[in-house]
Amino acid sequence: MAGRDVSTGDLPLQSSSEVSESSGKQNSSDENGHGDSPDETLSPTSVIYFKEALNSSNLRLGKAGSLSPTPLRHYDFQIERIESKRRNPKDPIAIERLNLMNMAKLSIKGLIESALNLGRTLDSDYAPLQQFFVVMEHCLKHGLKTKKTFLGQNKSFWGALELVEKLTPEAGEITASVKDLPGLKTPLGRGRAWLRLALMQKKLSDYMKTIINRKDLLSEFYEPNALMMEEEGAVIAGLLVGLNVIDANLCMKGEDLDSQVGVIDFSMYLKDGGHSSKSAEGDGQITAILDQKNYVEELNRHLSASVNNLQAKVDALEKSNTKLTEELAVANNRIITLQEDVERVKEESSYQLESRKAVRSDSAADGQALGETRKQLKEETLLRLDVEKELEVQIGMKQEMELSMKMLEKDICEKQDALVELRQQLEDLRAINQQLIHKSQSADASSKQKSEVVARLEEKINQMSGTVKQLETSEKHLVKQARNLNSAAGKLLQLQQ
Image 1: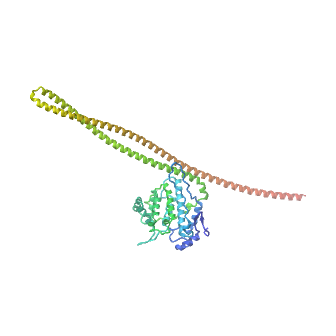
Image 2: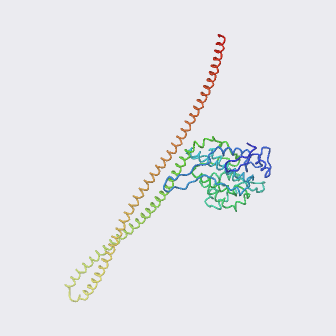
Image 3: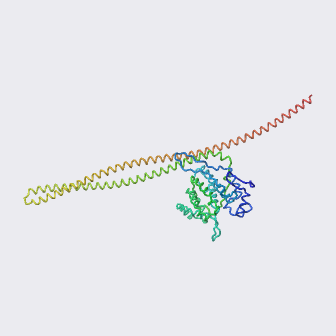
């Protein structure tokens, strides 16, 4: 295997001898073929293991089916070919980038499949998740420029990750959290913590796309032929979108991220060749259930937003209703005051009429006082008419306000009914979501049972084949004995003759 070219479909890989020869032109290598910085590149032995992993693994997750009239966005994990015209097939740096890209693809695919089969939130001890962070660390370290400091040379991808805070302000929370974590003393540890927090926020793909699109800023940290500066980096950023379906809860306070050694475990990706064909049907069912779950969750978000908007409208209507009620109370108080004024004017008018009658019985000398009384009576009568008109206006305003109050109450009732219906629909959708989760779990159980039945049948077939071989052997012995008997019988007959 080490003396011939290794190829997997359209993915150009080199044999161990070619990789060691080309690596010797770039960096000094030891007797095992490993470079000076094992964290930077993959060794020639890794290339051989990597070829076996590619040949034995199913690299497709499955196409997302459209299960609803308005399907949500879906992710198809198929890497586009990188045109061979743009690179030298014997360029060791290009082969390193391609190996890292395919390793990232295998790691992401394996992590998603195992997480869906597990069906729970992932933690820091989950092996596929640990391997994913190791692969991402290798990808980010590829082609890093060496910076000279007072303490010596430093090669860390933390500086490149800090660019995300400048390009995307919402990433500042992650950077601040990483800087506040106790126990992190090296830039490498801070970079590892940043990757874990971004994965928990389900923003890792968005952040990687943001920095990859700004190659003018990345050129300060990476060489021109580094993975992050080429097309492979954009492909890996696209693959990271699939990790948004995974829920992870990682505790980093007691974890030593500074001194961890990132080594890729290729044994996790060396599977049986027939495994992919047997599990293709199960993968399709899981993908369909996952798409249904995403559709239901999106519909739930839309309904929740509608419920929030209606609740805000109801609150606004209640506030306006309270305000109108206060204005109506003020108007009622004004009407009562006007009615009291009218009663007082009536009493004064009756008193003046009585006083006028008493004045008529007096002497004619009081005629001048009678004229003044009549004039005052006319003024009081005009004032009474004005008060009555104002009272009628206030009564009309009161009727209008009562009518508007009734309309507002009717509108509030309608909104509350609609809100109740929307909440009922939301509960129904949640029930459907639970049913889909149960179906997914039952599908996983049935697939495990089928695999166990297949294993038992294979054992029975092996036993039967062994039995058949034994029967064939015994048959040959019987035939041989029969021939010997026939020859002996012939010799006896000759002797008798």
